[in-house]
Image (cartoon, rainbow, N blue to C red; front, side, top):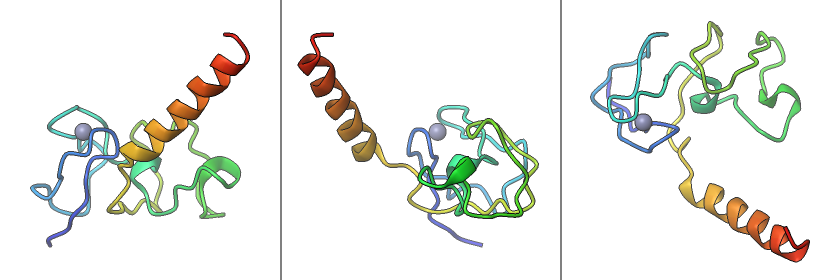
Length: 99
Ligand SMILES: [Zn+2]
C-alpha cells in the first residue's frame, strides 16, 4: 500500500515503510517513534487532551509510541513553518518584555 506519510519530527519520507505502522516502528532518519499521537489523524493541539477521538485512551506523551487503537497516521504531520512562526512570535514577545 503506497502512501505519502512523512516523519512528524524531521519530515523524512516514510514511503519505504508499509502500513499499518507497528508500535515499534521508528523513523530511519531521526529515530522518532512513529506510532505516536503527533503523527495521528486525530491529533489536534487545540482540543482537550489534544485528541479529537473522544473514546481514545488518554495518552500522556504525544511523542512516544502508544497503544492507542485509534492510531492512524496522516500525511502532512510535519509542519516546519508553523513551528518556526511560533518560535519567532515567542522571540518577539520575549524581546518586548525584556527577557
Ligand atoms: Zn524522522
